[in-house]
Image (cartoon, rainbow, N blue to C red; front, side):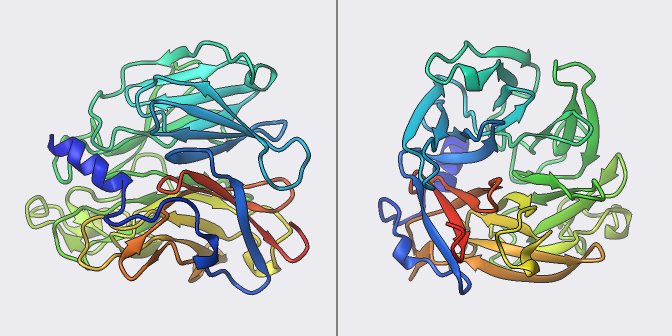
Length: 364
């Protein structure tokens, strides 16, 4: 019951306004935001197909969606359900024509999906022995530049020490073989991407609850070596020893975050911006979707942030889209971001059940 309650709290704001309310949003000058689709209940991770299909994982009755914009007007005119009845199929990743889907303990694949959007194939099981716990059990997934599928295993709790069985990031071959641990001490990452040029893996991590409104911060991390440990459950945000598990585990022994995102902001999906439509200051920046707090006295997060880098270091961390909550009432909760080939940017929102498209100038 406690896990179910936590899930419901994470999915719904305390006082939600139904549907997109884009006039409430604020973006930097010259940017525009519009509805790409408002027919995607509990939209979560986004993935882009080779032919421009936008795939969307969700928590809605185990469904996975495919959005198509055949007339290229910036709005998906067709929304298809390509899978249903799966267990929390939040994660989607497109690879060589196939769509990979996470379903808690399983990784599934829909073969040659873009040729079968109207008659989707039955999902095939690629891997089925991940833990079955649903607390932090839904998974963001992505293929790395090494051609392997990266899959996190979140901590099955707010705070616990399960050794190296949980709280880590793994990778496997596309056929499910060769499972390997990549990094440890990661409470729950729901977003990661590889920096163009360097190939470095950057990821968000959600900090523990119940240490107060302002500690610990959620994290933006960079993996510099295989097997690196990022502190959980012994050290939080790089400099806060855990009161229960921290003794004998000094923070200096663990990799600190590249950036503290703020307490309880729930940093989820992130992507490097590789397009050219946006102004030069955003080229190579990281966009981070912050889902928003669920138990903080005053809400935090509920926005999309831009992290600009210079020489591998954070140069600025600034709001890009704000206004999903007002006066402690939320109508939207950003989950993931996905650049499109034309340089625009998609944002998923599981509370409003929508995907938005952000353009700059006349690019929309």
